[in-house]
Image (cartoon, rainbow, N blue to C red; front, side):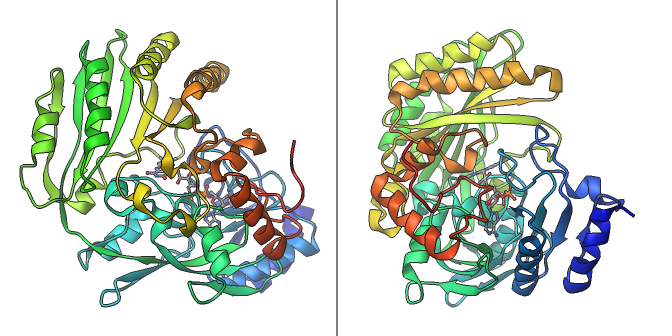
Length: 454
Ligand SMILES: Cc1cc2nc3c(=O)[nH]c(=O)nc-3n(C[C@H](O)[C@H](O)[C@H](O)COP(=O)(O)OP(=O)(O)OC[C@H]3O[C@@H](n4cnc5c(N)ncnc54)[C@H](O)[C@@H]3O)c2cc1C
């Protein structure tokens, strides 16, 4: 037995959940995260079963001077849920979601995924706007904002957060709601996993059962014009239509556009979607009336198989020039598979009270992200360079700051600060000083407790 494993015996005895160390046969699967670019070897993985396990894990890490990482769904492209040599506070066995249909609220445990959440809430015909891939963590996504198929209708995911139970690094269990620690609740609506481990998050729910949604694929020379139409559609859309777009090129460098609409109005054959479906260049159309759970399956992505590097900007406007630039950037790579994701922020994010949370980017027209996804380690440099250069090409249209949920670990602090603006960032720092003054929780899009101007 290695000295590391010997050390874990003490944690094994104290934790209700299991503890996985390097000598355990499960170790290599337990340390897989969504992004295969991230390959780290923690000293131990503490699979917590509740707040007291989380407090025990913090205590163990402090006593043994181990750095900690927090794991929810393991999706963060930066791989913040894993570290070399430290302790992972793994919430993947805390996935219960409890729905109060009368109060229209749901309480999700710290490691629950969107599939867990949507399955539980849809059993009552209820919903909150979440992520578009079922295996993404509810808490990780919410704490960083949250953009998905219902953003225009109900706002960012964090706009629907009404309460939380948190374990802070000193082991205290604290609650946040509009009555109790309201400033902390404000900070949790976008300020990330900086203040504690959320063992429960509570959400407001809306009534929703069926949507008109699916995917529309366009291919060929009409893609540039269709992207302009997509922009105009999003800008003029009523808040009952959310839409996202992905552009790419195929082997022959022919451009392709994928549009994912999600309509929740009263029509079975909405005029907005009729127009969209008649654009030239359609090669596949799966748009239909379907359950919200079916809509949540239109995007899927294999877990832990591909290498990912994402970088982007919130843009003021999707101008004609920017659209041309984006298509040029796809051609510049010269082959698939590289993508650019365009998430429209029209509708509810704009009408939310800005004082509700710290995020500044709700003013943007769209979130535009270069997404390099590849399989071979030998191609790392090329793909990472493409994503960085593409983000640099988008930057002239940027509002400043990026989307914390898509950031890699190499983003400078200034990009994190700009996502909030100076005043909100200072308020977040004050919260950090109160709840995590030693910056134990620094494996995230970090809000350092102290002075930071670079
Ligand atoms: C395939 C894919 C699809 C995605 N789709 C969307 C989408 O539709 N919309 C969107 O907005 N984003 C999306 N994202 C981004 C996603 O929201 C972020 O990467 C988010 O951080 C993932 O949370 P996680 O719990 O799965 O990740 P993890 O890697 O487990 O956690 C990331 C970080 O979140 C924090 N965290 C997680 N759980 C807790 C907790 N319980 N308490 C405190 N801190 C916690 C920690 O700081 C942790 O380091 C997607 C990412 C991927 C890879």
